[in-house]
Amino acid sequence: MSKIHTLLGSVSSPQQNDRVKIIASRADFLTPEECERVIALGELFKQEVGTLGAGETVKQSTRRSNVTYLMHTKDTSWLYDKLGQAIQAVNADAYHYSLIGIEAIQLAVYEEGDHYDWHQDLGVGENSTRKLSISIQVSAPEDYEGGDLEFFKVPDATTRQRGSVIFFPSFLHHRITPVTRGRRY
Image (cartoon, rainbow, N blue to C red):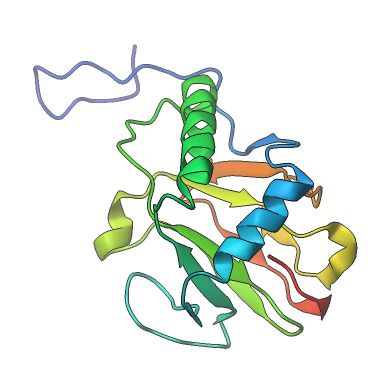
């Protein structure tokens, strides 16, 4: 007997997904040259202070970083295409979400002392439709210290390998620890 009670008589019980992964990753998603290209793309767009939620709230005790939105243009279409293919593949394998698009890619820059405390990418307003979050390790690991991506109660789930990509549900609490040396992209 199902533990799920449907609210509407015409709705069937959800299908169980035995392949679900909390965190899915892929090494060598971007080459070192593509990582450098992403960093260079960040120079083409306006850099702004990282905010909280969908609004303009700046609270440096929670988030201290700068962000550049890499809008979908002819210069960035290769990245959107590559990311779109990877999203479709990992979603088919691990999540089975109903996805309709990709938000503007954020290139976050963390300098010494910058961080992003525990948070979720899912929230109110514009962020209420987020389902799948992605982090791409663009920096070389020797370029910075600290600045670790960590997930709440999911130890050792990340990598610092340059070019790797990590997928996770947007409701999962995560953070970037303070950068103690260098710059993390």
